[in-house]
Structure formats: structure tokens, C-alpha cells
Image (cartoon, rainbow over all chains, first blue to last red; front, side, top):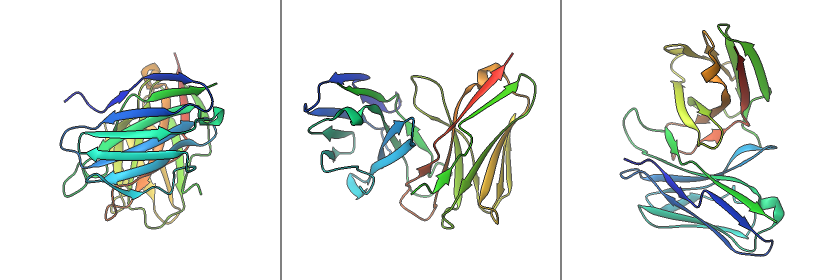
Length: 117
Length: 113
């Protein structure tokens, strides 16, 4: 398996523009997580899905942020409108919840570095 | 609300010596703990874990210790190697939960040759 795939790797946009980040989880994983990494707060959980259903979005900072998972192999994180303070690295991770030793281990993509000017 | 805390943002050690990274948590529901390692421009990768029924788990040069009464865990790397230089994240979750996890802010380890 190629692992968790995120695109784009880098995104530079201007304030007010819409930004869409994409994630393809590892095949067979039924949990998907979006994180944001900043210098001040480290890795923050934004939202996670189990079996394509959003379970907890309490980490989403504002209504400008939204996430979808239309099927088991694809998820998006959208920021509209974007602001300079949204600049960070955004990670997607997937995992397999259920019985077995692999439970609770999350596998991360390489991240998307977002710069909002 | 930082449920998982890594109070040392950075640590520098000499090659061959022991590295000790610390982590504290506040949520007593957490019963599974993990350490992740992150190199620049890459995503975090799983390193080692421990469940609350144990107080120690060892994997090669890496050992994780758990002190449930103190809500504290630590990662020991012996001997440290320059390739261990990375950011280390502590994470915690509840096995009976929905697989979500809370991460600390990370500790940047530098191992000097």
C-alpha cells in the first residue's frame, strides 16, 4: 500500500480564497483524522470520521472550516474563506478501529503545508 | 484543553548517551499511549506504544515507561544515535473509544555526534 496520500503538498493562496485539501486513506482503514500542526499548539485534532461518518468535529476552529468524507477512499478539508492565521501544516491520518493489535495506531500522510498570504 | 502535555520543547544529548523524553496526561480515561517520531517534511510515524495494563514496553533501543498514578510516561532511547534526531510526539487514547487520539506539542530531540 502507498500509505496515506495527501494533496497538494504545498499550497500558497491569498487571504479570502477557498482552499481544499485532499486525503486518500490506506485501503481497509475505517477511521480518518485531520490534524493541524502549528509551532504554538503542536498537533491538534480537527475532526475525525469512523466509517465515513463525522464523529467529533469539536476541534474545528471555526465555521470557515469544513470536512467531508463522501466514501471510504477520499476526504477533503475545506477552508472558506482562508485567513493568514490558517497557515500551518495539515495532516491526514487513517487507522483501523476494532479488535486486534493495530487498533489505535494512526498512519499519517506527509502533510500539506498551507501558506495564506 | 491540553490533555497531553510535553513540557520540554527541545532536548539535546550526546551520541551514545540516553535520551529521556517525558509526557504527562490529565484524562484518566486514557488507557493506551503511543510515541510518534517526525522528521522534517514528513508525517509522524508510529514508534512504540504501551497499554495501561503494563508499566514498561521495550523495543530495541526504545523503552516506554508508564506511571499511571502520576499520569506520566516517558520514552528512553539508549544508546542515542544522530539518526534519532527528530520531533517526538506523545499521544494518548482510550481503547474502548472511537479511536481518536490526543497529541502533545512535541519535543525536538537533537543527538550530537
